[in-house]
Image (cartoon, rainbow, N blue to C red; front, side, top):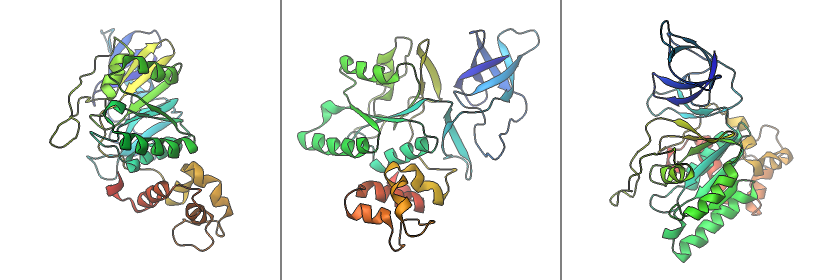
Length: 307
C-alpha cells in the first residue's frame, strides 16, 4: 500500500493511505537515502510504501520512501554534518515573519528563500503583527517588502488578530501544498488556527523579557484545508543553516544575481574580490540591494550572526 506522511513524531508516522484511511506506521530498521545524512529520513509530505502489521488494520511498517519531487532542508542543530528535512513534495514555501516582537532578520528570511529557491519552490513571506508597528517601522517594513517583491517573492502584510485579512492568506494557499514556517512567536499557529476549525495548534505569548517566542509546535504536521489545499506546520525555527548547496552554485539561487553573473569576467567568479565582477558592479549601482549581497557573503562564510 502507498500513502502520504501527514505527521512525524520521530519514531512513529501518521500516514494517509491511498484508501484515505489513516494509519500509524513505524520503520523496520533504518531507511537511508543515497547521498544523505539526515536526522529524519522520512519527512512530512513524503509518499511512502507500507505494509500492514499482522493482525492489525490500523498499524503499518514503512518499507520504502518514494522518489521526492523536492524538499526543504536545513542544518541539524543536534547532529553535526547532518541535515534535517523540514518537508517534502511541496508546491510553495510560506514564511511568517515579524519585524518586531520577535524580530525576524532579513538574513534569516534570505536563508529560507535560498533553500526554497534551490528547488525552484515559489516563496511567500507573510509579515504579521502589522498592528504593533509604528509609522517608522511600517516604512521600514514597506522597504523590506519592496526589496523582496523586486526579486519575485510574494509578500503580504497582515495582523492575525484581524480575521478578515486571513482571506488574503487563504487565496495564496488555495489548491497548493504549502510549507508554513517561521520563528516561534511570530503568530504562525494563530494564523493556522484561523484557517480551519480542524487546526487547534497551541498558542503562547511572546516573552517580554527576551522578546522571543515559546516553542509550541513540537513536530511537523500536515493539515488539509479542503480536497486540494494542504498546509504543513513546522516547529518554530531559531536558525536556518544552509546545507547541500555548494559555494559555486549559491549565486544561482539569488534571482537578481542569476542573470547578472553571466557578465562577470571570470566564469567561476564568486563575486567577492574578483576584478570586473558584474554582480559587485550591480551592487555599487544600486541594481542589487546591498542587504541581499551581504546575506550572500554571510552564506559563503557560513556566518551564524546573520541567521
